[in-house]
Length: 112
Length: 112
Image (cartoon, rainbow over all chains, first blue to last red):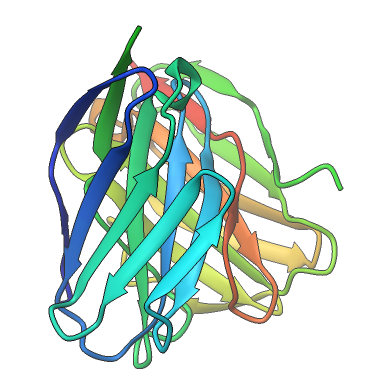
């Protein structure tokens, strides 16, 4: 089946930019998503990008998509301690019905 | 909107007992998804419904698990009999026409 990979851990200092990376294998991906999970909570949809776009910006969040390399990144500008959480990348393939394939999540730790 | 509602938030039960988890999707959403999250296996899709009809249940671990959606505003996931390895956080998510999925807060199940 299709696969989505993320690094396990990222540590940054408050005020710096964070970049969380994701790679996927499904060449038929239509939409790619970023979710945030805080301790004891569900997954919160942060943003998503359609596969025919290469960039999307939403306030402090910038999503970059390199479809050729099947690489997705989430940049968080001016990272705050409240951004500490696990971030999940997910993709929806054209042939997957409406199912999402999730990565294993990247734990972002923001140091004051 | 209240978002996806799940109950109970926490469930502790003994091995062999029946467990029923409940979900109310966002009003107007026509897709409903059940996921399980563990440290070892990450986020796994168990089953999903479209217009109350089960579409894909290939992720359901075994016959001890069953899910129903009697109407557009309610779904249940039942485990009978429960086993310690079923301990996990169970999430329900809903979406409109297969677009972005919105997750509930989850039910943390502990089977002793």
